[in-house]
Length: 351
Image (cartoon, rainbow, N blue to C red):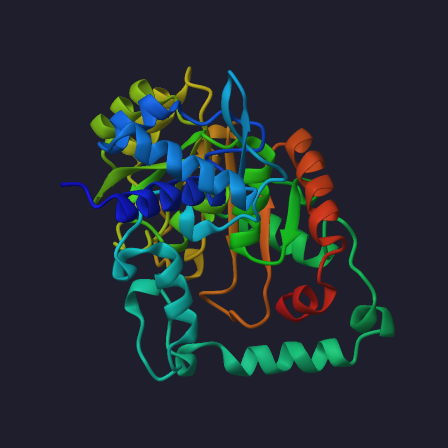
């Protein structure tokens, strides 16, 4: 026999969760009492009672003869309520928090972070001393929209070494690699879109994509790059908008993209409308540079990003985006709207 009180609570909790996750938006009609009863395998009277209690709380409202509707405004965004409810050990939000809160003495190989003693401390101290001697505006003023010209020229030369043609005016500095991907997601994605990611990939990609309310689909990563059969099947099945990958030293597998795989991957993506985000976060560790998708593509549908968090310092946040000129203009507007000027101090120390 049904424990009616428990079932009513379960229905109410399910509706609250969907409202918190913005699956039920203000003004949206809830499933009819019969449809909800069938979906939740309980009686119609249980659903009616749950809906009426939620209406009394002000979360939903009844329209006689029409049904029950979500009241407004939209609930504050709760990332933990979006997507499947996972065990905390595999929840990307929990993993991201724990990676930052754990003591510095604990090794975190899954994060791709080096021990502090391995980082370029002497160079960082020299950079900070040079920044301290710079003109006052470097210490107190906002940076230009694209970011410090000297660092953008340096990045252009570094990219040229791996055959990526990106003049300084097509490079925009960001506060981090994560901000670079966040801005690209704001620029290209709508809630409900599909994004391809490597499987495995950097764990915070999943947390970031959840924040944008998009669907992440994993593509197995092989010693030579993504599994092309799985990649092609995902293009057909999901019509993804983005693919986020590493071409150099892959995080976390350490594999590198082969030229053959790079060419075939771009050919598969040719007619799909897919944009590829190539994250070059570990470029400084390469002894022999891997092929770069952005070099083969000419920054047409590949956006090249990176940062110095893994190789120089995660404390002084500085990253970059290299993309086609019209996209850089729009991305610069987005960066200005969301973070205003660039951080001059970090860029000056890094340069």
